[in-house]
Length: 491
RNA sequence: CGGGGUGUAGCGUAGUCCGGUUAUCGCGACAGCUUUGGGAGCUGUAGGCCGCAGGUUCGAAUCCUGCCACCCCGACCA
Image 1 (cartoon, rainbow, N blue to C red):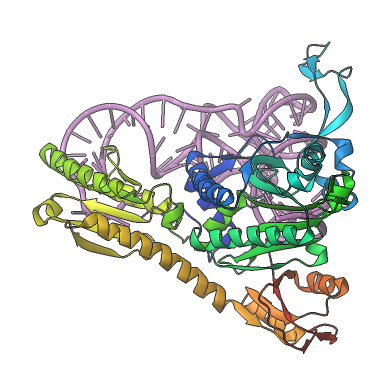
Image 2: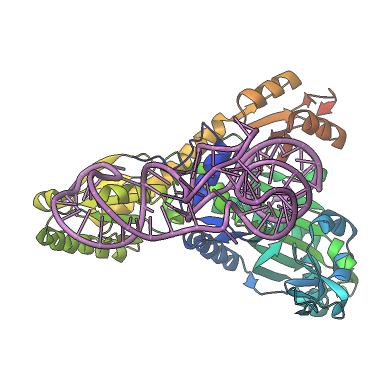
């Protein structure tokens, strides 16, 4: 079998790069830092969107769409927000092109300069809160629970397909509430939606928790996150949910009259996940032969490969394959018969493995005689012979089992790569020898956090939600600490 | 944005140091025949602004300058 991927062991970053390209998920475009998401990659994104959108609706949210362009003045109203994003904003300054007088091509028409420059949204808090101002007068107008599916742009210096691109697709929820408690509940609720989505659908176990001040979203009072472990032992922030307090309400002067007749600023949240989740999905599960997709995220769940020699056999095998396909579809299983007569079965096997199709059914003349099919699962590479009786039902169960198995494998890996360190030496040893997550005591200061980051490249991924109260001493300063925080090297 | 690396056919590459007819090889593509239960075999064919733009030279993939893109390491970040 021809090897098309660099092995993970040889070069993990190269393996990831190869896989994204070879599996047809995405490729680089003519524009620096911007990728083309190809049909197969976009199909995965659509599956993510469909599930998440359902969960957002289920929790009372509606979709809307706000402008791509944001007046520069809006952006600067929230001080820490502008500070956080200013360095990576693309700016629109003109609105017309013209032919160069010397015929050298097309140039910007300097006479068409915008009075106020516009920035391409890196996130939409400002334009949305400017809008909400007009929508909110009374507590009766609250809460506002809105999500938008959009593209955003952050002018990143260093990009990687899906993990960090200058333009990316995401959803951003923006909610407005009458009380801090309600907004905090919303923040927690949506973090929980993300955690559930990651574990149930992406089959990726996540740690949830609060970010430290230095890792907080620009403009947030508190940022919560889900952190997932990749196979190389590095952590990936897979989703964030922010309690914005009254920061944006104050910046955009959004007040409401309460039941008691008092005027107060509105409380806010925002939360988002992006196409980065596709990168997480790839790096969490896949192997040296290609993608391993959990069935719930697979654009094709079952691929049926017919095998035949003669025309007569082809007809019989196709008939049988079509029948199986129809039975699977009747159970809402996404199945396809690969009828390309330009490729050999072996070629198709390798191709579908590369693309991570969870289950392959091979059917040939031998199977027709025996009333069987060969069933191969992508996650374990196991092959077995199944009787045709109740095949669709058995495949349905198999898909459930695969989904479960992929999650358990990732969970075992994550747990085996989560360790505790009580001294800085042990911390550094674990980080270099094992990678993964390290739970350690921290004195709560930004200085200690920065020192550890400078010396080891590890950052505090979060202060875990479920952290037990535990007396200890900071591994750096020796000062008292009441609970362990989660460290890792991260993407 | 700093340091390092790479750019030759759809993909992977030889050639670059030391300039010299027609740019190497493999995969892939296309055609035909034989094949089809793990990326099939044989024969033949097509496919190149050697990243882009200048320059040096009788002559540039090769030397020089500038630019662009990608990869790795840093700083920054979902």
